[in-house]
Length: 92
Image (cartoon, rainbow, N blue to C red):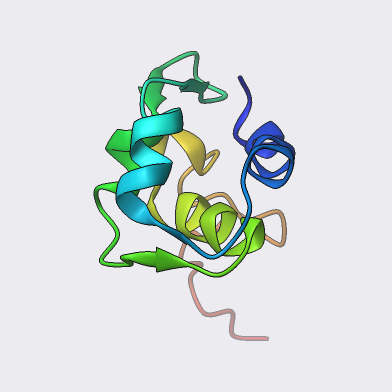
């Protein structure tokens, strides 16, 4: 499952507020796939969070997005505004 699909999953499956243990029991084994092809579980990602209670599906989704590993962030150090290389100072 893509990480973006988890928001809908959390919205449709729970009544909130919900504690972190209940979320882990229900969806802990759901695998999410990174753009790199690596996978991890909902439980692994949420275990990195110190949140114990979720007031809404958006809270769970925010915790997911805030705690995924590097495989989910895209190209590291990518900048489409320049090459990020130092250039010699020009003397005109």
